[in-house]
View 1 (tube, rainbow, N blue to C red):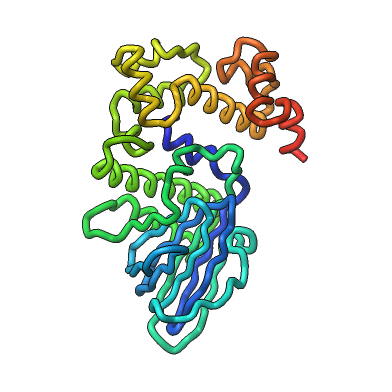
View 2 (spheres, one colour):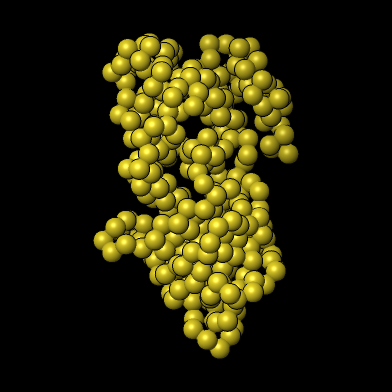
Length: 308
């Protein structure tokens, strides 16, 4: 798997939630901060305003997508001056996979699609941590057609759930998150070329090395072999990777191996020895020591805890 695919595959835990909400002006709603979550808001009809936790209100129109990767609180309203009703629920705990609601007023109608993930803080990729609290992707005619298509498909499934809708909606939410991350990093790579994940993913050499690590974490990688894969000298590769990613190549490799091991222990029946082999450790003992340093418990105890 490539880096962004792995980010989406590893961060979510449990079932996602979604709600199609019809608002009729005047309306304003506060959404609570939910640490350990990530959420989307999409405008399907009408317009509204995003009231971020800091900064000026942001106008939203049909097709706009807002991604909140850190579970920060925010508000939505028909106008910046409309008072926000206090949070009535936790959308990431109290909603089901499919929820619809209508808040009646007498004015213009706005329809939004709210979706959320619960995250496992212990396995959140640093890419997610590098993102700002609010990402607004406005509609631009002809731009990001794949993002619009994913939103339209998701809205259609929620309007008319049919057989297999659970799998379709969950998969579309993953697709939507990938498109959002793609759009954000494409945008950021055009304005920032010094450091950070946008620059790392846009850098051909570092991107090749990251891809190699993610596709084959079990391989006996060294700084020299990763550098050769990236087409750089050992020293030049180490400097560039560390400067862009924020940690040395082998430190990132170790982190990724153990994050992958955690997922395998949670989601597969592979023995601890098999997991160790799949993530590049030559012995179960060495793997156990490294895993305990990262997670605070042995692999076996970790598996028992998450299964409880």
